[in-house]
Every structure is written in C-alpha cells, then in structure tokens.
Length: 281
Ligand code: AMP
Image (cartoon, rainbow, N blue to C red; front, side, top):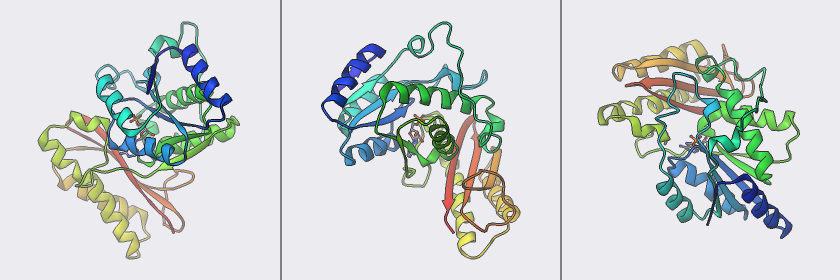
C-alpha cells in the first residue's frame, strides 16, 4: 500500500495505473476510520478496482464554532486499517496543498442544501462539494464510494457530479451500525459511556417511525412528533431536526406517498450525531 502526500506524486502513480488499464475506485474520508469506511473500501475491491483512499480533514466544511481543530486524527491506525482492508493507496495531502494561497473558487449548490443539516451548518455543503470536486479531478476514478449515512451529502455529490459533467460513477453504500444500532461515526469517540448509551435513541426513533409507516402511517407531522418523543425520552439532548423529507428533493413532506427519507440530527453532550433511514414505497 502506498502512502502519498504530494499532488504530483499522486498524479504520477495514478497516471501509470490508468495507462496500465486499471480502473480506480475512490473512497474520500476525513480519517479516524472505522468499519463504515472499510465497507466502502470493500465495495471498491469487490468491483475489481484499485482502491485509493483519501484522508483529509477539510477545513472549508467546518463552521467557525465546529470541531475542525479537535476532529480525531489517527494516521497510524487509519493506515493499518486501510492496509488490512486491501486499499492500494492512501492520499494524505496537507491543507496547504489542497488550498494553496490564492485559491478562491468554491462549488455552491443552490438547492438540496436548504433543509436538514444545511441551515444548521452554513457553508458546510459548499465545502464538501468543493473538496470532493477537487479530489475527483485529482484522482479521476471510475467510481467513487460514499456512505448513505450522510444522505444529504450523497445527494449533493450526485447532483454536483451530474451538473459539472464529472465522469465518475457515484456509488452509495449502506450505513454500517454498531450491534445496538448506532450508526458508526468518527464522532462517536467523543461520547462518554453514558452518552454513548443514550445515543441509541437515534436509530430507535428512526426504526419506530419506519415501523409506523410499514403499518400504514402516512402523516409526516405525526411521524415527526413521535420521533421527537422517542429522542426526548432518552434524557437531555438537543434536537436539531427529526424530519420526514422527499428522498429526491429533501423537502419536508406532509404525507408519505412516494419514497421518503427519515432523518435525525441531535447533539448529545455536545456531540453532533446524524442518522437516517430511507423508505421505499
Ligand atoms: P467521513 O470520514 O465521516 O467524512 O466519511 C467518509 C465516508 O464514509 C462518507 O462517504 C461517509 O458517508 C462514509 N461513512 C461514514 N460513516 C459511515 C457508516 N457508518 N456506514 C457507511 N458509510 C459511512
């Protein structure tokens, strides 16, 4: 497994791989890797691709009061896991390489970002779209793998790739969960044991709403208030949203008639956690 930090070294290796006919599968991450990330690497391997993993804590997707400086960083542990999962190359650029002095261009989406996480994280999705566009241009993969756990991010990236004609296949991969249902996340390591136990309320609320829909409930307002009740019963926490949105537009629904996304964001003990479940009709 190669570990590369310089853009020109990355280009040289990938040019050679492509010239030899290899297809590249790309997994962009912010590191502090876990089994969710490994599932993306495995999906690329199953497709028979050379797997490139980027590890870059992207400053432009963090707000001024967010956790950029304390975001968990574990280069050695990440490299060990990538090697074990069969990745071929890790790209670890320094911030100055991705945002050299004078860089001012940002990718902005005028839709898909005004609901769910968008209003709570101004500028976040522009930062995500910008770094993913840059990484896709650098790596030029045949396919890029993203987790459905970040459903709005996945929708934003699919839209950006279509709008900018970036020649890559975007593959969404199912959310990997802990045995008790909590979606795996690099931020779970911030949780105290007590908050870690409480955090199971997120998937419990989503699962209960999904079961209600399966039993015939179609009223989105009722589903929202029932999800909130499950979250609030778990103990003190701050609900950012407990939403029922259209799966394609991410706009709030009144009635469930076609595919929907149930999505939750909460803060437990200061840690922001998100999760979602999609409902196919
Ligand atoms: P991050 O390092 O949090 O930026 O995530 C990098 C990629 O891994 C994104 O495409 C995430 O959606 C994906 N990911 C994060 N957590 C999970 C999970 N629990 N299951 C599947 N994919 C995940």
